[in-house]
Length: 257
Length: 327
Image (cartoon, rainbow over all chains, first blue to last red; front, top):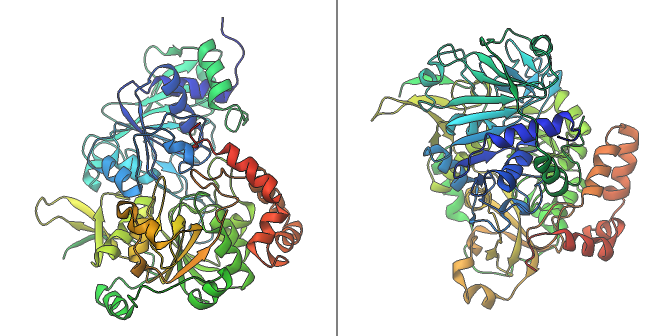
């Protein structure tokens, strides 16, 4: 019996399970940080967490507020710099990138720069930070995002970080490392993957209590629907307890609605 | 050379390494006492219109004491290198100090949310922008530190970030593969907060160095603010730890708790309550002006600001929160 949980907790618990023990992951700020820390405490004790500012493989005592704060190298293996961490990604040593984003399209391209005209934007967001770099260099990119029509769009206003760009082979044609690209999108409604040939977003599993129709209504394009849609496993009591008590006791992330 | 694609935004700084070498040729190398106050450092090295870069990352190990002084000095039309700039960018926007910004990460305060005022400033269209990524700016600084006119990386390929940058896509002469040429940037001045410095500017940093080692070597002038000043012997007894040598440095400012309200690894954690006050005050422009008067413009020194924010009592609490202290 799993206790009640909110959407953010569901997303973080689901995301954490995709991080296998003994792999390397570069994480962005916010929910990805929480997922990596939860994974480290539940299913992947030897997960090597990489922070762009220089923290390598910390034993996270609490969820970092910034990907450069002192928790990001607490009892770490190394306190280095951005050059060291980013070049490690460049050489192909980093398995996963774990990111958030304002807008995402069917090829997994992310917009975290602007809505509207670039020079006089309706909304200005922070920009790439290290996200474009991670999405370019790491082997597989995962994204945590709330799913609705504003965020999941046919075409993003601005490609800040590369997904599959315009479709099959587009990454390689642009000069990005061969064999890299988006892997999973974890939302409050479902887990999405990408079709191996068309590189379009494909529903993999839908969360308990969510109907397929609800997923489609909250997607601004038509995702590929497989013949059988699985149900995402529920978060366990252990995951929820550790998430609430150890990972985010201040409810910085899981308190967001 | 065959240019396959290029960004459409202008370069704010000249990438010619020989012009930079001419500057460095004349830069003094004598090991002299470079101590001065925040105000003296800003007066001397941060004029209106100069191109500024700030060390640290996010609200971590940032030279807040100097940034407050830049606001009080009413500096205008500054260029800025914005690589994961958070509270520092928020401050410079609050002071209307900026004219052009090389952007990798601005406006946001990471998990804390976005700055309403910095958003207003950047959405007005009055500040010129050029788009990059954190690693791209790191490579640009590294190229400058190496004394060459560009560095190469595989960042930004295929994206609008590249289209709105000042980078160029070139073909590798060995493999024929595509790479992004990133122009070197020699900032006019860098301000870096460190744990320890001697009076000459030989510095120790504990924890992550972010892009500060590259920045200190790329910037034409470097202002160091230090938690503590140490005797020159403390440097010479352990030269392995020196990360910035004196001849890069132009000013040394003693600034205990100088990264407040930001985090300083092994010293104190960020003051989340105070940073939340900023985000709240920024929502209403009138209220925000009063807030700025109270905390910055009507304050004569950084020490006075620390007092206003709770003084020693508050700082002791932040020391406790700094989880890196091994117990």
